[in-house]
Length: 75
Image 1 (tube, one colour):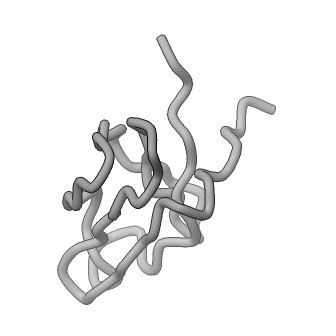
Image 2 (cartoon, rainbow, N blue to C red):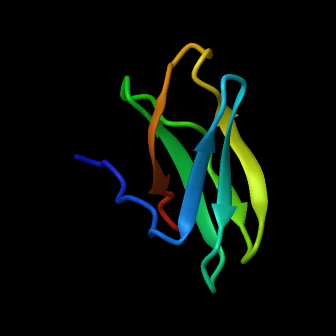
Image 3 (tube, one colour):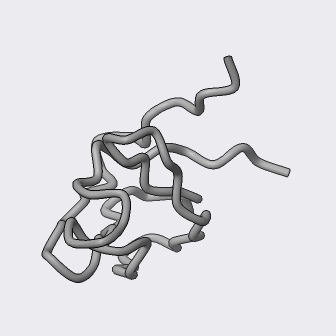
């Protein structure tokens, strides 16, 4: 399978009804995407250390609740 590995624990996911947000508490820049419980994956977002950004829609969106953040394959 081409399933990506989970993001490190220092990248924290917050979910609300409207947005899913990622906060990078790691020392390095990371690229992550939201993996939803229905198997869908959101677009990749690159977060420098300390960044907080919206990475996908929230749990009222078409894919429902996010499951976890996944690392994006480095190009």
